[in-house]
Each structure stands twice: as C-alpha cells, then as structure tokens.
Length: 185
Image (cartoon, rainbow, N blue to C red):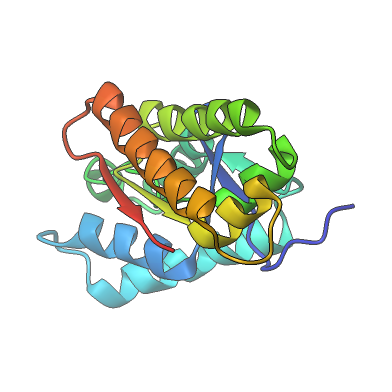
C-alpha cells in the first residue's frame, strides 16, 4: 500500500499528470458553483467537507480521474436536490505541479533527452486534461541532478535556460486559451 503525504487521493489530469486534491481547491470549486443560486455558502462548505471525508475514508484508490471526481460531485449534488448547482460546476482541475527534480531523478543523471521527453509529456498531458495552471518547480535542484554536480556551474546555468525555453515552447504548442505556466526555482 502506498502512503500518501495527505489523506486525499491525487487527481489524474490527462494521461499522466497528477495534481493534489486540496481541500481549499475543492471548497472554492463548490463555493463558485453555489454563487448566484439560492444555496447558502455554508452548504457548499459542508458538501466540500463531505466529499473530502468520502475521498479520505471510503475511496479505495490513491488516484482518481478528474472526470470521475466531478461526476461523483455532480451525482452527490443531484441526490441532494441541487442539480442546478451541479450544472454550474466549473470542471477545471486543480493546478498541476511538475517537479523538475523528480523528472530528473526518473530520467537519470546525464540523460537529458529522457528528461525533456518526460517534461513534455507532463505539460501536454496537463493541457489536454483541462488544467489551467502548470507550476514547474525545483528547477535548480533538478538541473544540478541532470548535470550531476553539487555546485552551480556554467553548464547548470545553460541547462536552466534550455529547460525554461523548452517549457515555454511546449506551452506554446499546447496553445489552449487560459492555460498558464509558472516556473519557480
């Protein structure tokens, strides 16, 4: 059995991207759905806590597809007589966080081609799955891992620029309105 860092399963977005199912995102999604309806905001919060409880205590998997999650939420709302709220749910998945360090570990030291292939797959999968935001992080650590050095070198700086340019080019190829990218060191 896999021990998750938090009680909720990951959300699969597209074919290979995963996002954290964070209570705040879930609560905000439901609060936005009840906005402008006759349903009070406190009820959205209670429903959100119920969904969290189900996912933490009764859902058997460690990953749930975003379509499956939204279908379950809609079914729950409909069973509560809130079909009009279910119809208003924005089915945009949560932000996808891509760790350059983790991808570099998976690719192996010195295997930049494998790394770039993995990075491209993650970004395109997130875009195809409907994510609006991809956060690329642990850039410095990942670069040092790929270069196989503990100290930052000129080669590290060059590779960092190459990765940043590659991420931006891949974002351009995804070319979907509303799709944004955040690159953090």
